[in-house]
Image (cartoon, rainbow, N blue to C red; front, top):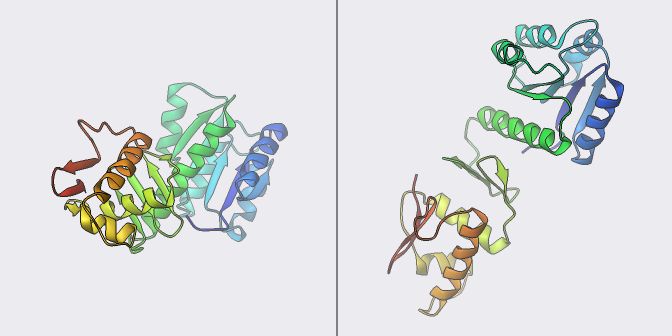
Length: 233
């Protein structure tokens, strides 16, 4: 994920806007905060926004109208509505006019952060044209060899350096078996001996535990007995 992420907050409830700003800044995002939709819309061409958090019930221009104007101006960044409106029809209307997500007040700030990060990952994935060879994204897996970040079904999972190296190699060769000898020599960078298979097995077990992957019926990392391991495409 790129650095210097710019996030727009438009909410006339000052306490809510300020709270969101604090949490976003704690994640090192740049925040542009407005209590007026018209002021935000006026400044938008100069802000280089990556994601917007819009309140629906604004006094001047509603969040729905603001989102509509954003899309009319061909801005493609994700829009998340943060609102007290809970009717299903409101959610449908918001998504129909171009919003990407919807969270109702009161909300858990950590859930809001998770939604923001998920939308940013999707946005940057589709705008990278998949040319970055250090990012692999398939099934529910997204792994970034530049940042050593690993996400499974939108959930970030912390891996050790060795666990990450194993998973990266398996993902790089997805659909094919990576033999135990190759796995060991490339990850540990040492000559492989039969006893080293136990070392690999321990790390594979830890990986599966973190991924909630059942060793007997694995969804992700499969053991090819007597040969090595593979992840299906």
